[in-house]
Length: 219
Ligand code: ADP
Image (cartoon, rainbow, N blue to C red; front, side):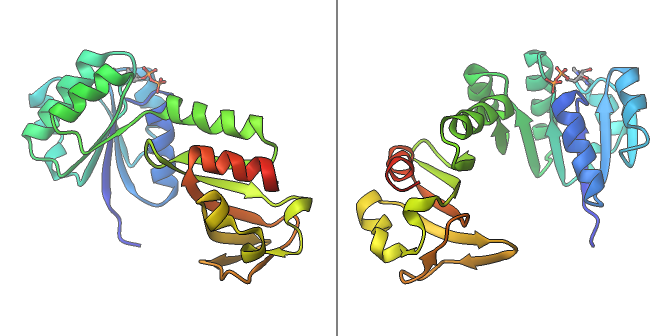
């Protein structure tokens, strides 16, 4: 596997988890935090972990951060440090900067200064969990945009033995079944005559309300 270079700034719960997952995927990752304890914790997990304040441009330069393909800014509470770090990285010409936003105001500033991707892990996870707890059939839920979401749902009795066409999912609910998982098998872009069995996992894309209707009627 080609090793790609990532740097994660801020090794809190979120940044630390990103750092660990990248390492586990065999990626080269530099972890940066101003807190010595955090850095010690990740020194055996990341390719390299260093104590540094990312709001210090000179320090980032000396770490050779401009050679990194993708930098993830995972500074939590300190909005000023997160914004300043992003600005410095942008000025340095880093090609891909992903930043964890604390709230909508933070996001607006990050958009203005040119962060490539802004993520809201707590907010997004909250939405996913809410959908999972409301319906026992929804295994996962991902908002793609304000309008569209993807849901992973387990087929119940009402779907069992019926084809997608019989259930009329596209016309009636405006949702598309993009894949069906049955055990280890995955049918991608299933045909209309594909029959669904109880326990199949349907990957459905559609509007939030449409997915909810489908869930209520057919699951
Ligand atoms: P989480 O909610 O993901 O746990 P935290 O706020 O606890 O987020 O963690 C953010 C991390 O970012 C902390 O370990 C903190 O030391 C680090 N951090 C904050 N400011 C800077 C900075 N200027 N330079 C480097 N690391 C920083």
